[in-house]
Amino acid sequence: MQDPEKLREIESIGEPEEGSPDEELWEEEEREAGGSWSGVPLLQAVICAMAVLALVFFRVSDDAKYQEIGAWYKNEMAQELELPVLERATPKPSYTPEPTATPTPAISASAPQQML
View (cartoon, rainbow, N blue to C red):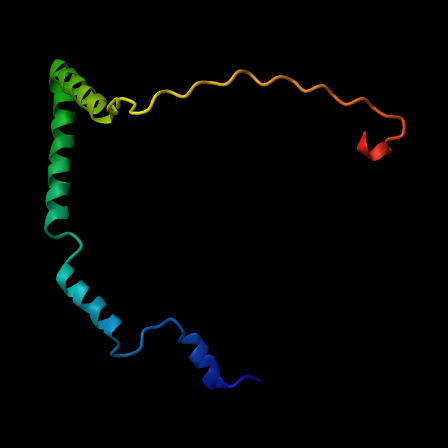
């Protein structure tokens, strides 16, 4: 039977010790963070919800305006995702000709069967 003290020590591996500096840092960060729905994330959620509601409103009431907004968005995203064309500082590499097939070696009657 194993020593109960050693078992407790094994179970406590990875747990922070009481009064350790790491524990104090985590507690300080939790106090600074406040609630999970405070400040900037709450503002972002409200703005996003308003944008979605506006799009739904335009979709239901004014299809032409919705199409205009959709076209603007697609145009902006196409410009945003388009990568710039860079001029080559070095010349383009010259391509080598296609490799030629090598002739197969003649099968010798004295070659072992495993090699064939």
